[in-house]
Length: 267
Image (cartoon, rainbow, N blue to C red):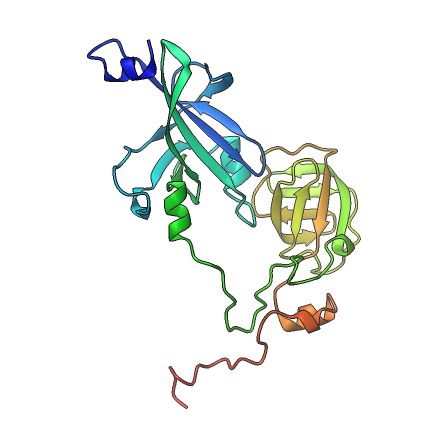
């Protein structure tokens, strides 16, 4: 029987749902069914995962976002929820019936815009793609003292290669990672990044003690001997831009902006 026949029939339907997550790093294929399913040639692994009810409305309505819940210990959460710059992750939900796993229907597709951890569960917010685009806003520079540029981007102009060191992992203790070598000194790596060479997965560096580097959150997959890249950080101040990177001419902030707004405070 076809999907439509099973879906609209009075009896006999046996619906299953599968969740396809594709993004910057690894892709994940999960199902809320109690055993693995092969849908359209792709194997989906069973997991405790659920979603809220689909709502009906126009595609522009941002409040129609879907919420997907799964255990916070799942590797996908560790890989995508805690990165310094949120990586892209798209969720697709398909529905099938047990009579034909090659006849699936797409129920929902959207980009994961946020992760929220509540107790042992992680909640993913997934607005529809069109609604996500319509609700977005074009980034614009702010009139502020800190630099508006992203370190190493085309507007910043600082060379990543010149401020990067490749080393290997010698020990791992939760989010404290020991490396074989570190040629940077002082606070050079503060607010910088540690990036896994093989996958590009990255974490922000919050402190350094010798060869022990503390990152914001453990990597989803990391082993002793893995190659990583250490990137110097920036606090987006004019002094750091000028002295640390010799890049004052391209500073993207307004360092002389007054600390007090004369229009909202007393003179």
